[in-house]
Image 1 (cartoon, rainbow, N blue to C red):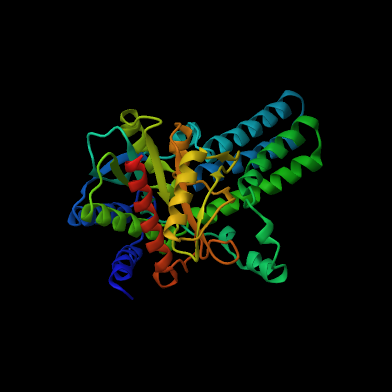
Image 2: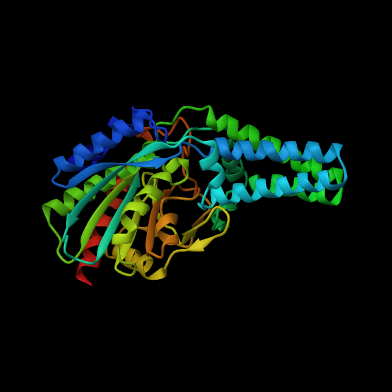
Length: 395
């Protein structure tokens, strides 16, 4: 292992040993350690604590349970009571959609205590420039759950090896979570006991899945997303060694990403008003330690949104010049921190990585360990990020 790969491995190994659920003491510990590390390489860095909730599992589990209760009430009552139960199920479906899609999250704020996520914010480059590149990663780690088990998917890949190669977007699994209460509502409103019971079963299964996720400890999160954190530190080191002019570089390692982008939402409230739309772009390094780097075209757990094309094309051009293979044409139904700046109108490029079956290996599993991280891929993502920054500075 060369020295560059050794430095990446050291970061991943150190932080993977710390349990880092969103808003936890472990997330805070890693945030302060990472800020110290960024300062040690010559980057101005500090930790910002922002209000956040700790999980999506509790609010979505409660809303799924509410849909089951609405179905029970509708099955035992008639008249206006049945229609009120249907309305309650509609509200549950709408609240799940609001939470998952990154809306106002009114229900989540009502039922969950406000805690703190810990964002690490660094700064390099030309502080006087209006042009800014924000390099994103996140240092918290997800809980596991039965729904993340990949054995069935990998069995299908082995049985039908060409099937996943033709799929450009992973399945919209959140649709099924919203569909449970929606089907309860439809069955209750129309008086169809069959529809209502199907929706109740769906909602009950969804509730069980959320309970399972909510009770789990964090996974090591070596690829997701300590690989991105390590690459971000490598980019900062490269910029310190060879400074850039004409562009300001911000580094954001967000907390509580695994609670569905809670940390970067806090960063947005504090920092987005000072960033100029059209002069600021976001480069997200997300799970970059698999076999091959991928430039996502867009993302959206409910509705797909493509990123603005110009910055994506610039990233692809830089990869071509460096000789780094960069797969294009794929979209994700798994939301990332990129969705927040995209909604605010900022250009985004999201770099992820996949294995030979176009899967994220060990995704949200206890096996997401440092020994399975492809350090060459992490190093390539850092080289690519540096090249993108220098290209923006030169334009």
